[in-house]
Amino acid sequence: MKLCRSITLLLGISIASARSTSSVIIPPTTSNDPTQIEFIASSNKLNTPKIFNVHPTMYGQVWTFDAISSKDPSYSILAVFYASPEVASTNNSLDVVVYVQAGPGWLYTVASKFAEFAELNTHGNGTSGVWKGTGCSFSASDDMSTMTIDFTNPFEITGSVVLNAVAPPHYPCSPTEIGASMEFVPHFGWDNAVPDAKTNVDLKVDGTQVKFEDGIGYQDLSWADISFPDALEHYSWAHGRLGPYSIVWFAGEEPDEAAAPNSTIGPIQSFSVEIPFENQVIVAHLIVNNVLLSVNDGTLVHGTGAIRGGVKDGSMDYSGSAGFEYSTSV
Ligand SMILES: *[C@@H]1O[C@H](CO)[C@@H](O)[C@H](O)[C@H]1NC(C)=O
Ligand SMILES: *[C@@H]1O[C@H](CO)[C@@H](O)[C@H](O)[C@H]1NC(C)=O
Ligand SMILES: *[C@@H]1O[C@H](CO)[C@@H](O)[C@H](O)[C@H]1NC(C)=O
Image 1 (cartoon, rainbow, N blue to C red):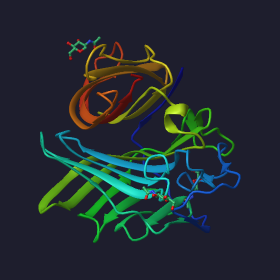
Image 2: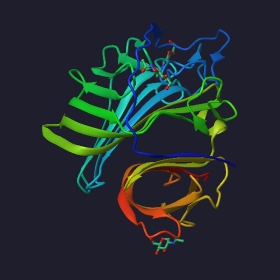
Image 3: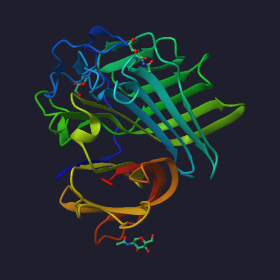
Image 4: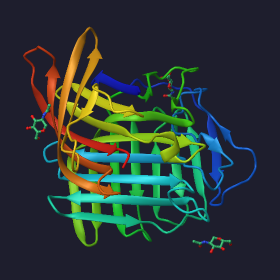
């Protein structure tokens, strides 16, 4: 069992001046050369590519963004930038898939065309990425206080999602320190550049404007040199905001009482977690409201819901919105 989680009081992010620039091109094709993969943090640049020479059977690397309206979790967006032969295609590992939810039952899913290549440029701690030819890109400020996703022609969705970070970046089980491990389970790396962000969503989706300014935003990078199910068969992941707390949890491998899904039969309905934080325990209960993605008979579900909780045995009781993903073996 591996349980990694972060919890932070909302903090400002300090601005610093150190600058450096690097550029990486990810080709659409796989390689048979020896794979290089990074699991020990060598910098504070959480979104640089972490795996090179990806073979056809590998998960590769995936930049994930999402945002959920804090007032109504049935408004949300999930945008996933793949450099993954396993998920995209062995002939072209580069595409972008976006899910937009705008009210109960209103769900739009679109995959981009395959990219000619992906270009990742890193300035300071921020990495920007262009999936060339898809109309999909993201950009980051040097200090990682802001990330923006842009969609334009020929992508079917147009507009932008702007994340203003309100919690500091995090490695799986530690704050961001050089030398820290980013290996969540063997062969699978995960880092969380933006655990929580005040987020503006302004999109045009199939003629419909989808706009909310109170989004709870999030961004992470995951990577592996084996297939995803071989690395992580079951897991529960969620993020959300409870009063002054930003919460992220990611529990992998085995079901565990620390992140117990409340479902033995049928689709997942709720989760409960208890997270130690500064000599206290924060409890959170997530009720599933909306499912964006359900595959393999509901054994993999991604969705949004309402989260409620506070300090255990304390008087505080907060509620908010959250996004989650849950996977169990069949
Ligand atoms: C992938 O490329 C191979 C070799 O060029 C080809 O035989 C195969 O049909 C392609 N697959 C797809 C899904 O395009
Ligand atoms: C990058 O992150 C480190 C560690 O948080 C910080 O000291 C440094 O100032 C940051 N660089 C920029 C350009 O914000
Ligand atoms: C499990 O979910 C059901 C239905 O949402 C709820 O009534 C029950 O209290 C939950 N149990 C726990 C332990 O959270």
